[in-house]
Image (cartoon, rainbow, N blue to C red; front, side):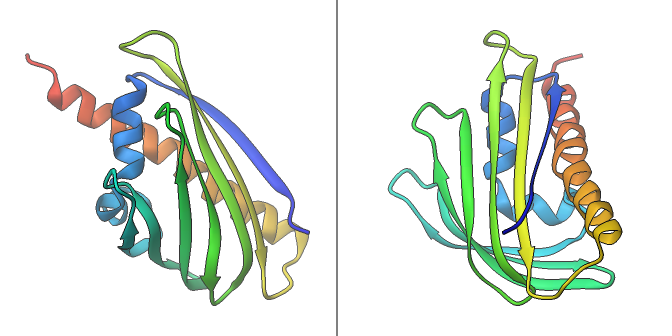
Length: 154
């Protein structure tokens, strides 16, 4: 069974803007580091992605995988599970947003559990987890806050 990692970060933006960036899968290769491409395969009636294919190139780890998404009705969380992958046996994850008012800031909690098809030494696995978590939160923060500052009138 795969270990689960969780990290939180405060982003200076409303939850709706943050969730908008999380849901914009087409833009992930612009900011999500090692993701080379994304493709939404299926959407729900609200136009939210239900299945997304990713191509990852993180040096020694290359993978093509598909995730299935579930969006919370309140717009404050999204979770996913692995449908299929080349290097992964399983993946479970989520973003949970906790707004501090209508205009932000918002605490974003990212949880991820990945089990690979190949054995990985504990040290390398922890380093890979740190890179994934840092990208998921710090790059998300950068992307959201850049889009927030460019959206504000001077």
